[in-house]
Length: 117
Image (cartoon, rainbow, N blue to C red; front, side, top):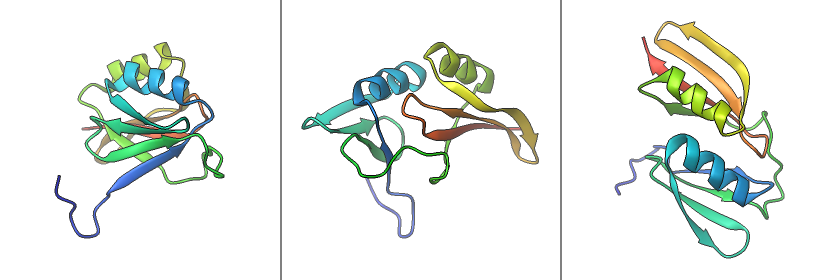
């Protein structure tokens, strides 16, 4: 994988339960994971490298960076988020480039999902 200069390289989410995070993100987005010890999990299949850090001194928060995930079918993704136990924190809304909604994962991190107009 080539890392573009000044491009997104890695997204790390604080976790209160790596098992719950893997189940949620695996169910909703089909991502796979690799455990690195007892407290760290690498994310595979999300287009940007990332991980869940259960040992972090950072707490999950809606105040951190907003990670936005692309979807070809916003309604299906929203249904999958809800079915997997996620909470929609901002319902679907339109903006000039498309539509998006926000959700909270099992650890309380807030992310968004968007689709073009």
